[in-house]
Image (cartoon, rainbow, N blue to C red; front, side, top):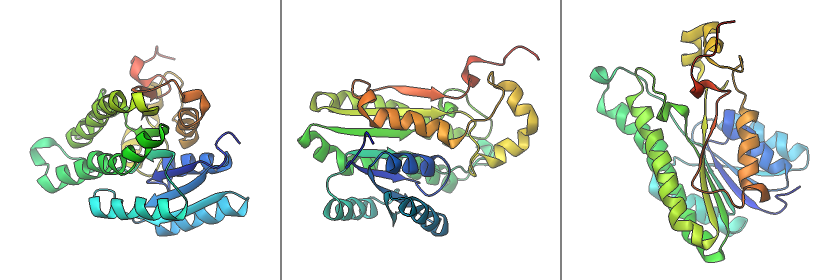
Amino acid sequence: MTLQGKIAVVTGGSRGIGRAIAEGLADQGAKVVAVYRGSKEAAEELENAVTGRGGILKIMQCDVSDEEQVKALFAHVESDLGPVDILVNNAGVIHDDLFVRMESKDWNKVLQTNLNGTLNCCHAVAFAMMRKRSGRIINISSVAADFVNVGQTNYAASKGAINAFTRALAMELAPRGVTVNAIAPGFIETDMSAAVRNRAGDKLKDFIPMRRLGQPSDIARVALFLAGDGGSYVTGQVITVDGGLSLGPPPAK
């Protein structure tokens, strides 16, 4: 258990990639807070599953786009468990539409949750991590930041900004022993990606050199590496985990 006793917070932690990361951290001995916004039933099921096998995982509700809610969340975590050692910013939303039809509320919702939510959570832990000269921040980005899809100007903008933010923050925090990295998943089998996957159908796999969709566990394993001793000299990186999707279409079968 390489993360024994570490305090970890995973936003968007009740389902999909967030759940896989939260479970992985708990299985390695971390004390985990899985943050959810609306999926209370899924969060409770996760908590029961992890604690049922001896892990330590608590759930907390928070809208990460709300700065005051985030401040209250992390104040509670620190008073209950202690200073945060590992932060995984996974909370995110999609509101796809063609740009000429996109309403400002859909643009703002995506940027406020995906980008500002990451900012709010990082701001809540950065000073304490700098003070103790250790910490891991892992931001979940997307290959959509560089390999764009029609109808995702808001989503691509949010993820591209997260990549730039990750590198800039890493530069600031590195002298104090805090690493900041991002993981950019490709097509992963989650509820959030279902609409895109359903539109593409089985042909989607033809664009992925590994000929399969990713699983949340594929992303979780990379997050666990970055959170542990193996990631101690890795910072400012955006690590693509996409089965080769970003290499371009593979040769025909």
